[in-house]
Length: 117
Picture (cartoon, one colour):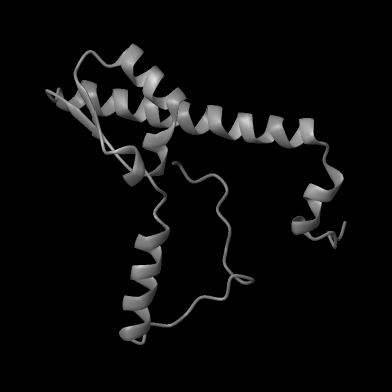
């Protein structure tokens, strides 16, 4: 069956409640994944403290769940520094351009939906 409906038009067909459900589901899985992987790292390496940074560190839900599960101090960067990695990606792109590395065509990239976070 051909799929000719563009994904960027999907939001027009969703209600506000459906959009909120999708966002909440994504947040729940993202927080759950970070907390679970942090616990695995804690159990394996037994650190004396943990530092959480990046955009995910701004999540109050993540902070609460980590505080409930980790028995060690948790350090967070200042909230104004808890941003996504857009600047890092842009910097990498600039270096790749300077080094004349080949560009990728986003329409032909192979999608691997089962990759682990």
